[in-house]
Image (cartoon, rainbow, N blue to C red):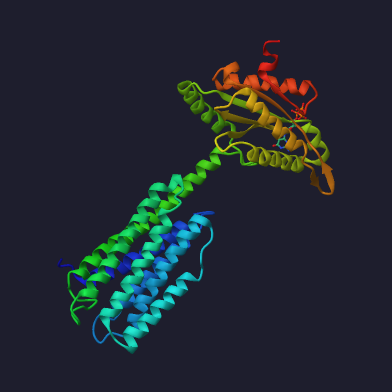
Length: 391
Ligand SMILES: Nc1nc2c(ncn2[C@@H]2O[C@H](COP(=O)(O)OP(=O)(O)OP(=O)(O)O)[C@@H](O)[C@H]2O)c(=O)[nH]1
């Protein structure tokens, strides 16, 4: 391939520096999403490292510039890895870029200053870069969050390609005849590596921006679907889930159960302890309910101090057992606010599709009727819709 190495190196360095700016700007509006600044710093280090390498291409090259030319990109890959960790988990091994930079520095001093050996240095650096990129690919391709799957795959695959490229480069240079390799010689491996390397840099920057974009839109969707006070689903998303579940149950013939939960005498809690305490009571109830239900049940705040749980593949009797367990757990909770003890209870109405049909509004109406019956009967109890349906 007749591509000029110098031109490609300048382009690659300019691209990396540009992407650093782009990622910095993207990170400014990323809100709580962390990791983007690591990627920006990583790109900056890679860009600067490449400019150092380029600056000593013409003989007599400065050995220290060559050392820095490998040290900075190594720190850059470490920062990219940190960015992936932070993006996925919120935490990272902060020492990693320093460790990698230290390793590259020692290798550089050894193979450039003390025992100059271009070939050995190229093999060692390619191996380390290959392994670091493989680690980045691995970090991206394990434990993938569903909404970000495509973005993770895209970025992870790019890292995997880069890793393969570096490892092939290490093997080719290792087996090339002594003194036949030079970093800037027009041997086939050099233009190919630089060409694929520049493309990969570009894909990585796109990949990172794609990941950020997917995460922000997933966060927005989550916000739009949940109740701000309790974190439960909001009524609109519950209704959407109900339509989906009803269609599934119609197809499979499964039963769908529902619970309507209402805090007893909530007005007097607000009046006596204040609205903030009332809010906290709702949060605690939501937390207990979330713990009680199964992972495929849907828990939502229906409005005010009323909550709703949809239970797929459940009959009314089983829903009653679950509801009564929730009622007892909540009634047993001793809440303390500003030194004052607060105990509260809930009334629950349960119904299922066998008695009320699969229409969501009919299910809600049935469970609501049962819940009001529970209130009438003295509160702090669970009533089944079918129990008085045939009375
Ligand atoms: N703190 C707080 N109060 C709320 C919220 N939403 C609704 N409320 C209050 O909840 C109270 C509901 O009162 P009511 O509908 O009379 O029912 P209740 O006092 O619980 O009586 P019963 O349901 O009959 O046991 C009202 O005073 C609302 O202002 C909220 O998000 N936070």
